[in-house]
Image (cartoon, rainbow, N blue to C red):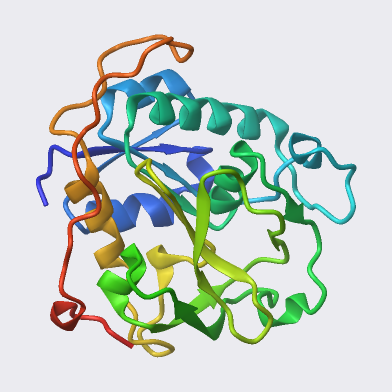
Length: 249
């Protein structure tokens, strides 16, 4: 993976160390920013985990959302909009996946019944998931994956153009989504901090999404509200043989 691939992390610097490390360890250059305009100089966008989305963005009052950061939400929506217009790859992790769903008109369960399966104070919880055959994650990991959870919310109504490609078979919680035509992927789990003592899963194969789906150069400088997007950056994802994956649970 070429070092020149710059990936924007739209978040507060104090909260992004794990994501920066994850990218650096795998030959990507993280650009942590609070300015959506900086995405134009990068090859992709990582929307990190964090607090909950302001419920007004999906048309609801607060019914259990915690640690909302409306300013950050707005900036992340703007960065995502830019990537949609310019077909830049977007990977959303935990809150990032929920923000993607909200941006496409979906909604969020603000406080899951039985959230104890996915959240425990101070540590991740590991649980099984099933992956849809033929999906991007299936090509990377196969049919099953033991993933880590640290969330009390989940997707409710799925946004327009998005498909659920991974779920928890215990409670049917969506664990990953992909857009049907744009290079946009979201996972509810945390690939940047998987514990090898708890799972054989590795988050590293997910980063092939940036190198295989990214443009060869950053998006041209442009207003976030540009009327026209450039031509498609090319096909995605790369078709890989799941039997060749180093991490198949």
